[in-house]
Length: 93
Image (cartoon, rainbow, N blue to C red; front, side, top):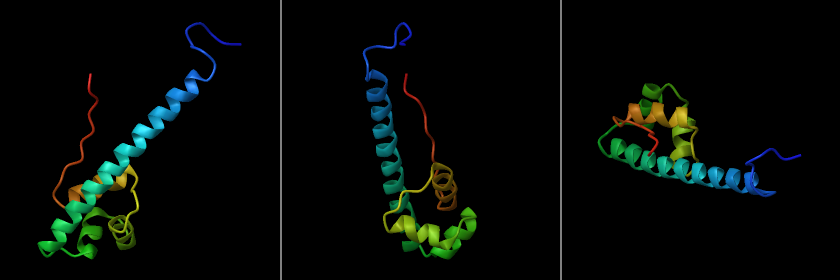
């Protein structure tokens, strides 16, 4: 039984899939920017070990991200701080 205002059958599924797609794109963009920031830190002499230690994550986590893995947002935030960046998500009106 549908409640009032729920839209046609399948409508909620389409919205959920759209939100998941947007979230996946956002996480990928964050991961790409984080890879660039890590690469810049390495060019400036900071080792992955130091980045990992400053972020309080395993060195393997940094390695995995550099090689294409997408981190959880809490890990991305820690790593961003460790390489001198700020991760800020805001909602547009």
